[in-house]
Length: 163
Image 1: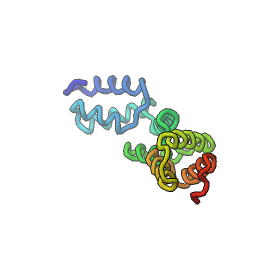
Image 2 (image 1 turned 60 degrees about the vertical axis):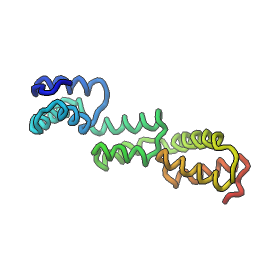
Image 3 (image 1 turned 90 degrees about the horizontal axis):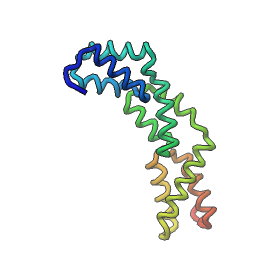
Image 4 (image 1 turned 180 degrees about the vertical axis):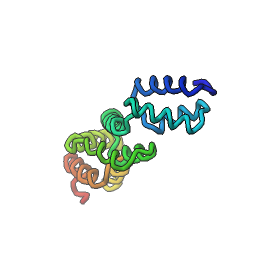
């Protein structure tokens, strides 16, 4: 993108940018700022994009939640944190996160934990339990979901004497 674009050219560029993939207001503002346009022009462009449905924060949040869960296998905490960093309001974040199916969420976490279990191999049983918990929390899964999954995995693997 060239510095010094005029407002009309930037509006066309931003509309094209938003039509290729979902973007939030913050992402578009960064592009406009990088082009060197003043904040008043930025606000007019953003308003026009929202009015013409090129930007929709709810649609963006739903898409972000779906993609980060299905493709990156992130948990709710990590997804929520990233949406918060993009200045998505709490009600929109909550609504988007509620679209995740609890059963599928748990299945994905179990698959991730099984993969991690294979990679950590031997070692002390209690140490492995904490490695699994740290891994789940690092992926953004709540401890209220991760703890039962870890204990279920340990029970399946024959290491259920850790409780």
